[in-house]
Image (cartoon, rainbow, N blue to C red; front, side, top):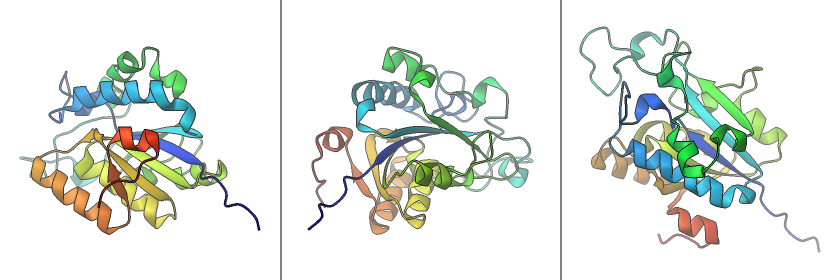
Length: 213
């Protein structure tokens, strides 16, 4: 009888960008700086556990109604942020500070999204050579994906939900994310768990422990 295959796991770091952290972000999320630094520390300690490390970035050119023409409602419309080629769209340097080395050196693949649409999910993005995230993961033989980043209530949630739809087993590492608000964070966790995504702290993920229901 053949032994079951060990899962091939990827880590997807969602939108840990200057535009979403407190320093000079156009759309800062409270706790973004601490999250960026903590993700860097986690990656430095556990990079060898992951077959693939992927970053996603908002990379807006003209995303239509995603950018508010007037006052944003912070539900469907937002202040302009993470414009392609601007400092706000770049990965936050606190990732490197936490990792103790240039973070891009640890990354295998970068995916950019939202040039001409809202694109909350990393699975709506592509690499520089046009490959969608799902294609990148499948080509590498990935079966399981861990998600971290900003914001839990929006792009992390939508990326993890799309991962399930694409057939990947998913986990969100709760302490390496941050929501826009406590209420939206609770709603995101409920939606993720209902879809079959585990939500657990990173120390449990690192030890292979099973999260409590």
